[in-house]
Length: 156
Image (cartoon, rainbow, N blue to C red; front, top):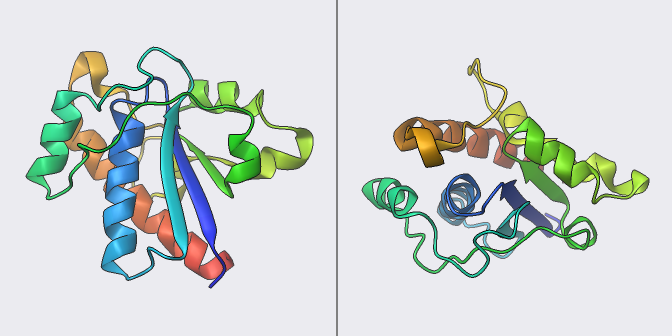
């Protein structure tokens, strides 16, 4: 298998994208693929650079056996499109923001996360910051993570 790199991106990099990073890391580790898949997360805003994930996200992850405590927020940059094979947006707004950072020949790296999910009606991973719903967001992320890993294994 070729080495592949994935970055998950939401608005602040404290709820959805660090959860996706943690879930995907755990999934990749469970399959013994850590040396082949590099995983990171970022936010389109700079509001939470250097901060730990939201305590509610950390708690939802801990309840499912995933530790987010070592993760810190950072802002996505155009360089992410040079360093990562997959730039995964959590929703349409973040997708649009990221598309402005990518050159025309890098647009193919940008994906909406739930495009990899199966059997879900939603198109976007909802932002739980103000409305709660961390368990539902976690379920969506687990589903899409399985689909993303399957896609990577079949295509890279």
